[in-house]
Image (cartoon, rainbow, N blue to C red):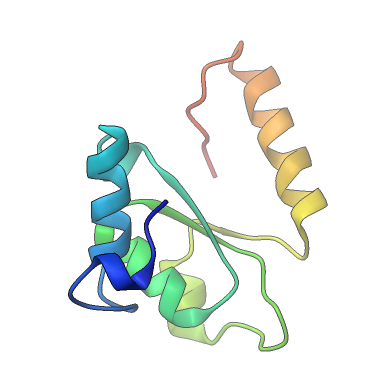
Length: 97
């Protein structure tokens, strides 16, 4: 697990996601980031990952909407989206918007 204490710069810098991708040895662009905040979406986007937002109390602004790979109202929606994507791709984990 990578926390903010393991990187030099916190969100919205991409450091935390770049470090996590490095640890699991997967290219950032092959990673899916789930975030509930605008700084988190920006960090995932800047890392080159697919940044998916599940807004908490604050709805995303226009800049965040443009950076987000997808926006879902809750984690159940994300789960259904991923299941559909996997079913439509024969189990290939590549997720298209």
